[in-house]
Every structure is written in C-alpha cells, then in structure tokens.
Image (cartoon, rainbow, N blue to C red):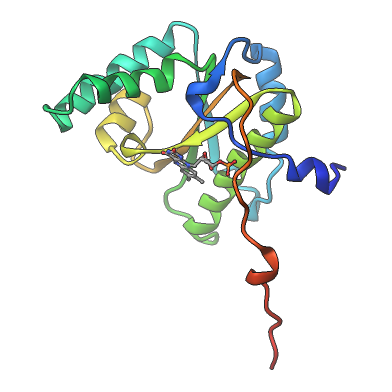
Amino acid sequence: MLTLDDLDSRLSIPTRQLGEPGPSPARLLRMLQTAVRVPDHGKRVPFRFLRIAGEARTALAEAAVRRLREREPDCGTAVEDKLRTRFTLPPVTVAVIARLGEDEKIPESERFTSAAYTGLMLLLAAQSEGFGAQLLTGWLAYDRPFLETTLGLSPDERLIGTIAIGTPQIEIRDRPRPDAAALLTDWRP
Ligand SMILES: Cc1cc2nc3c(=O)[nH]c(=O)nc-3n(C[C@H](O)[C@H](O)[C@H](O)COP(=O)(O)O)c2cc1C
C-alpha cells in the first residue's frame, strides 16, 4: 500500500503548467484501471471517461469558445484564449462523467460520489506515474448544450470535471492544508 507520506505528496499542478510528454494511450488506460477501483454501492459502475488528446484538443477548444461566445458575446479575447489553453496545452484531458438516472435502490448522490472518487483516483494514479494533473469544472461543466451537443453526454449524465494530465513545467509549492485536528470531534451520546 501507499504510505501516508506518499499520499501527503498529492497536489494538483495548474493545467497551464502541464506540458509534454503526457501518458501514452496504454499508460493512460492503465491509470484508469486503477481509477475505477472505487467504492461503488450496488456495483452500478456509475461513471465513464472521455479522452481528449491529439487534434481533438484544438477541436474541443474551438467548440468551447463558440459556446462561450453564445453565452457571453462580449467576453473578450483574453477569456477566450484562457479557455482554449485549458484544452490545448495539456497533452491529455480526461472528462470524468457520472452516469446517473433512475435507480430503485441506490440514491443518485451515492452514485455521483463513486464517480467523483474515480476523479481523485485518477489524480493519484497520474501522480504515481510521474505526471501532474488537475481537475477543473467551470461553466462548461454545467452547460447542458455544451455537455450534450459537444461532449455527447446523455441527459442522465453529469460531468464531474475534466482532468488535465501532463508533465509539470514548473515546481508547484503546496498550499496550506486543513488541520484535521480542528475538524475532528468525538460523538458522545
Ligand atoms: C469538483 C472540483 C472542481 C474544481 N474546479 C476548478 C476550476 O474550475 N478551476 C480551478 O482553478 N480549480 C478548480 N478546482 C480545484 C483544483 O482541482 C485543485 O484542487 C486546486 O488547484 C488546488 O490544488 P490541490 O489539489 O493541490 O489542493 C476544482 C476542484 C474540485 C474538487
């Protein structure tokens, strides 16, 4: 198992600081095989993944910018360029998708939780393989036209976020972390 020190080293690398090389398709698949080892009530497998790599990165970036212009015609080129680089700079981005919808037994929140866990597992897997990664959402994670028309999600699916994966271009200093002792109390009857 990983040591606590290994786990404590987890941190996100800002997407714009992720460059080449990224994981090969085989390595990414191997990382995803780890990511799917999440607690999953009822074994529903309520998640799937979309890979955005190679030329698809530019195509997705341009589609996102077109949608941004529809939403905010006066957003300006700086905002557009920032959105573009979210997809064009990192070698690979993985969209983590929660597959939800009707289920007689397992509440939707539990299935969403399992899907979200795969995101954390993918972040850990990427770092274990020597890459940097970051999970992002932003407006596009909640924009149904973008999700359904551009990314191809069904109405029952939600985007947990997109995880950019690549090689860190700079060293990132860790941020202060919450103090667990301040968050822990003993329940007493
Ligand atoms: C669900 C979710 C969505 C996030 N979306 C964004 C985002 O859109 N933009 C952003 O700058 N950080 C976002 N973050 C934060 C980053 O993923 C990351 O946590 C942050 O860069 C701090 O790094 P750390 O993981 O080392 O704490 C999001 C985090 C979560 C859990």
